[in-house]
Length: 211
Length: 211
DNA sequence: TTCTGACTCTACCCGTTGGTAGAATGTTAA
DNA sequence: TTAACATTCTACCAACGGGTAGAGTCAGAA
Picture 1: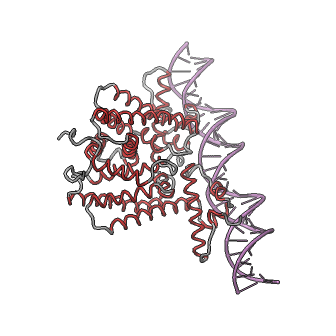
Picture 2: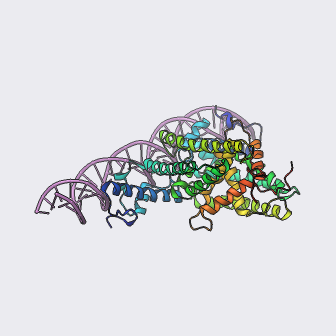
Picture 3: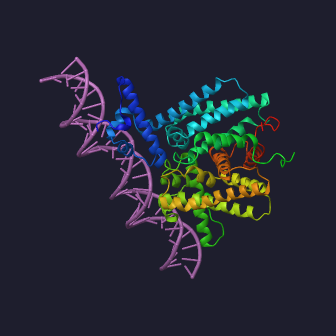
């Protein structure tokens, strides 16, 4: 009862235990933020959902903003980890893009990923915090544009404006986090493959396309 | 000075004048909500931006929720007007879809449209208000699915799952409202045409597509 | 046994903000 | 001149919620 199961520590060093608890808090917070919205969630709500006192949260996190920021930082980190793993491969631009989008969809269906997309509106964080996260996302953005450009160069992607194409892709994939349900019929991979197929071939039959 | 230029009334009936002022308030509110975020905007902020007193707003609108709700209602109405005008035409499913998406992009680059997309997160409105708007958007959603299904039937759209395809389309187009800038290089029509082209033909060259 | 750290409980402070009251002002039209 | 309306100004209330203080509790280590 003292330590709720959601953030129970197993046999670990004190540091690991502390980190695990922090993560447990953040996970729960992210889920509640996604359900009710950040501004409609009080710190007391998070504490209550965790079966824990309010001061407990302040024992592990600086303040409410910090809770949100850490959630978004984790999501951004996951995206970067994913990006790095994609880069390891030696593939055509299109194949790189496919791998990246699969990983992206995976992250966008986690609590942290959803939190990242839905809580970046102005006023959710201090400008400094926003800036920090934005540099991370800018890197992702430019990387996608670079990959598309590479695909155009190697012939695996049709000639198009990488910037606008990436906006369309990010739009479709980010939007997943607004409608995805864990208990729904579609999982991240299914969605990703479906979207990738759409973006690859388009939805107008080849024999109907003019020009 | 008594009546700021933003909501100045010309020679109209009192009712028209009142409506015009209401709309002026809503327009200004929508713009500020989009800039700073709804929860970070106080009613006093809106009043100040309009050069008007706070009680003035309550003279025309019920409360803060009402201001937001009316903004979203207007956007939804515009979407429905657009939908109706699309329907008037007797075209293939794909051509209908193209017309619809052009109109959709148009709305998504207005202050009200942007407001609609960015302020539907849980907790922004009372559940009842949310429900009212949701039925409006559901209609739009199902209409798009219907059009896609029609396109598949008449051969103008490739065989695919209308629901998932519509999610991808809405995602891409809704996302416009997150990055569009009035003073940017792209206008609504340019963006729409570009996206439509991407979704029509895909981004993988036909001669590279396997199968 | 005692110490320490982790944590709870209760209670409170205080800033912000939505919303209202009510009197005063000005403008217009009858 | 007067009545009606639109609007401002000032002031205020009440609720909420972030954040803190401080004393107490409990488990485990030494």
